[in-house]
Every structure is written in structure tokens, then in C-alpha cells.
Image (tube, rainbow, N blue to C red; front, side, top):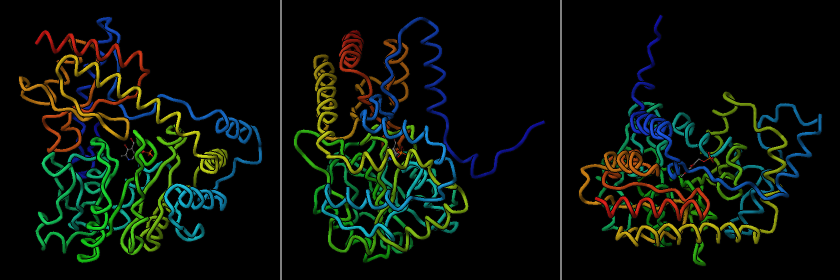
Length: 390
Ligand SMILES: Cc1ncc(COP(=O)(O)O)c(C=O)c1O
């Protein structure tokens, strides 16, 4: 018996990741130890105090009911975190929607907002769910290319007016995945003005808000005047607090957009497990100075890998945020995919071909800093030896 996929599922890309997974298995079977720098999942654990709160709550038999949505103290903790970290005021009773990770919100937002054929502006390259959610909802994707000559920022004046007029929402992601750009204030101000002019909702994905290095800081879009008229922001405990597997995040900002997302979610899930909400509250309410150690860990990892690759004359950039290096492939390879597959085959180091993030990603690979410094040093040596052999 065979069951056909729906058209919307059939339209989703699977190619690159399936090919990479098959090659990883084949290389591992040959006995070469893999160093996997392809996934964006933190390898570090949450701080002990967060795990302690989670462990105690899990043992409490009274905490196993459906929560349906955020418990009030979660929304208050988010508001407190936003006030302390970004000087943004949020009304916890009306301006916080809890999510099962920001992926949940990003995946469902298009279903809550768009009708078939509506336009959505997405960064290219961009985190894959931006485009996939629009495809699932039957919307029309219009990519906003991120190119080096424009500092990897979308160019609003390149968007035709009739497209802007038909656009329902626009996704931004700073600091971004796969490109770790930190957007300047002027860019956010321009984005808000553009969104107001054309009646577009801005969806800012702020998943890497706290993975910012070298003494820099990222700003919430909600810190800019007029932002809550046109913007919502997704944030997550996955990267900031290493709680990726707990599946907890949130959306804040424009009330009307948040209400629509909450309404859709009330038909889909019954809330996050209470012990996870309690652990998240402890994380959000803690003195954020404990995040500094993690920032230094990623800085050291970045320095180790960048130095290793530059030794082999691969001029990769020094990123100042996130856990990703976005590197142009060596010129003798015809595509990101042939380079990533050959690198894996020859060295056991796994990186993600840039076209997994959109057409504009062709010619690049994404290298994730999700292994220890020792393993990143080893990966650097293997890649340097490989590049010198080419
Ligand atoms: C840019 C970006 N947004 C959102 C997510 C989803 O994170 P989560 O659903 O764990 O909050 C990720 C995960 O890798 C990401 O890189």
C-alpha cells in the first residue's frame, strides 16, 4: 500500500540533509571518526541551578497536568528579562506568548496570518523554517538576498513597491543563522519605517540574542520607537541557556499578531510541561552574568577554528555572534554541496552546504562551533591538511 504526500509536504526540500546524513553514515562505517560541525544544537548543558529546578519539579507529582499556555510567572520572567537585558517594557499579561521553542512559533505563524498567495519576505540565505512555513501555508515567498556588498543586510529599496504592498510579513534574524550579522540601529529604524509604509508585520527572530562576542551587544527590535506597532520578536531558551531539548521559547511584541498566534496554538498544543516552564523561569530570572562564561567559551572556539583554517590560507571571517562561521568555499569547487561532501569524505569533518539555506547560500558553507576547543583544533588541522593537498 502506498500513501501519497500532500502537495504542501511534497514541496518541502529534503535533498541536502538526506544526502549529508547518508554520507555521514558511510564515512563512519569506514572507521573515520566524524567531527560534526553541521548542526546548530548547543553541546553545552544548562547551568546546574537550572537542571536542579527541573529535577525537583519533575519529582513533584502535582506538576503533570496540561498547562495549556504560559503560567503567569513565566510571562513575568520574560518581561523582567526584557527589561533588564534590552530596556524593553512588556506587559506580561498581554504581550507574551509561550512557544515550544521558537521553531513552533515560526512554523505556525504563517498559518495564523496568511492566505494562499499572500507574499512573505524572507532572508536568503535564511534559517530553513522561514521559507518552509510559508510553503506549508500556501503563501508566496519573496527572498530578500543577503549579500556581502551590502553587509549581508536586506535592501528594502530593491523590493518592488507592488511586492511590498502585497507582503503580509517579513522575517528578519539578527544576529543571524547562517550569517552572524549584528544589524545596526539604523537598519532596524529603516525596517520599521518600511513596514509602516507598506503595512507589513516584521517578525524578528532573536534566537541568538545572547551569543554575542567581543564586548558587543545585540538589540531587541522592540527597543526602537514604534516597533510594537509593526513587529513581533521570537526568542528562545535553546541557545542562551542551552535548553534546546526542553523545547521552550516565546514571542513578544505586537498584541494583535500575538493573539492570532496564540489562537492557532490553542487548537494545536496544550502547553509546555510545567517543570520545564519552572526551569525556564529560574534561567530568565538569574543574574545574567552567568552567561558571560558561555560567551567566552564560544569566543575561544571561534578563535581556535578561525586560526586553524587561516593557517591553511582559508580566509574565513571572524564572526562576532552566534555559533556559526559562514565561509566562502575554495574556488576550485563548483558548488557548496560538492565541497561539503568531498570534505566529509576526505576528513570526516561535517559542515552544511550553504544552499541548504537558500539560493544565495550557494558558494558558502556553514561551520558550527558546537564541539569542544580540542575537537575544533583537530577539525582545523584536518581541514588545513586537506586544503593543502588540493
Ligand atoms: C535562527 C534560528 N531560529 C530559531 C531556531 C529554533 O530554535 P528553538 O525552536 O530551539 O527555539 C533556531 C535553531 O537552530 C535558529 O537557528
